[in-house]
Image (cartoon, rainbow, N blue to C red):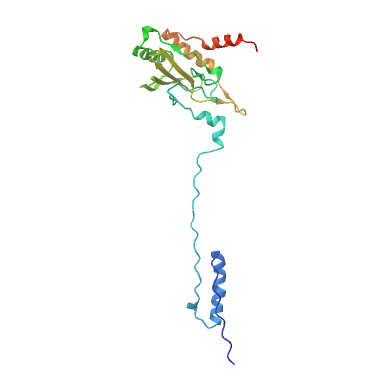
Length: 231
């Protein structure tokens, strides 16, 4: 009595993993041979290679950039969007600026241009005073802007190089400025920067004295006014 024919093989399920298909293929091939089918009747699905996708690069360092040390390395120079000298950053304690938006200890009075130095003569006189009173001066920017004549100069500081920014407003007869170190010192293990604004104020005072320009002590006036009010 002949053996009953083998039932047709059930349709193969959708491939899940290449490793699973490679283990099932030999069993399916052996069953097909026993049932009388040729090797060509069974086609084992080929293992599909999974393409390697490189992960996108990290955009910056979100954790490191939040530290005071990392913030101090990003020194913003030049005028702000309103065409003004920038205030002192909180991570640069030795800075002085005529912009009052910074801390009260970093505020400095602008220089008043006398009538004898009005116009283009003010810019030339300021440039000469910087070169005469500072060491190894390097003028990075020296150009006219819609807000006045902007000067950015680097010079030797107490530790490394310092930078001074000036905005000569000829029409108003004043010079706004900012003076600070290009690199800030941090004492381990503290995360507070170490700076001395007295040294920067002395730098500006030397330039003012060389020019013979008057710088009103606005901070002292503000302190005197505050002292007149009860606590």
